[in-house]
Image: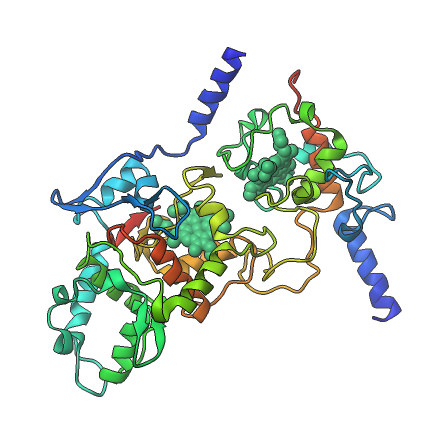
Length: 161
Length: 278
């Protein structure tokens, strides 16, 4: 790769994630013993309003496809595949939740929940929902900032809310 | 706490898209009973196998209980025309070799099956195209084409109610094992296998979809969503695509193997095609 294409790729990466030098690459995320991730992936705080958009948007997190969330009742059709996320901030720390969203298989081996911040190690990876082949590394399903936004939203799901 | 749980329950009910009567029995035209629940075959790690019909809404279930309401039956009529139409250089039709379509009762439930001469596992679609090419000297149909789906609907309809009974061992053992492996392999960026949705989560909603066991005793299925007959391999493609994976192609050895394996998971269920699904 020439210097200029490499540079262009880095810029493109930054634009895609909307973040700067602090962004932790999907392959560099440090998971703790229980799958937790201490450090923010962007160094910037998450935006819980955007987190709500990501959680409910089919093309993004689509979390409600599998999880029921009472606070998101206005968005129809919540799934029953995973546990309800009500009160999830009382059960898990921010680091735990970051790890679960980035790659839930670190916390729950073999879980059905997809990894949202992972780019390689797939079997027959496809190009989005086209059914066509794609070359790894793929773009992660969520950007670093989107993961932080979702974590910020999840942190609002406590019993007192 | 009690009121909270109650509110959550109401919420869940309100969010359920359509209510399905999972206890209902399937009787077509008031007299043709079709087995939609059967004891699981030994190789299936579930207590019971269930047709996709039991997971559908009351309205969708009803459409399949009367042939006048079943939109799939129109395509059966089309295929009856085709059955007796001479095509190709040999001057033959399906009828000239096989007689009336009703004579084909008992064929659908045992496919895919081993073809000794060809030394291969054949799906019904492969067999139909083999007849077209070698006996009729006609062009083969596209694997998931409308013509093929219609003919499969006719062949299924004359076997309705007969129990699915495909072989799992003997000469098909290798293909069956490949199918089993594919069924449990977690593919694509979502890393999901057929089993994740159809074995571990049948009966649960995934967003607005009520997950069934992904059985194929009802194929081809008329889907209200796309208003046409859908073939098994087209359905497989859709499900694999939804895991953000590269799909196999219709008619590929992988999908033939997967079809054999999935069919065997429904051994004991009645043939339903053309069925109605959403």
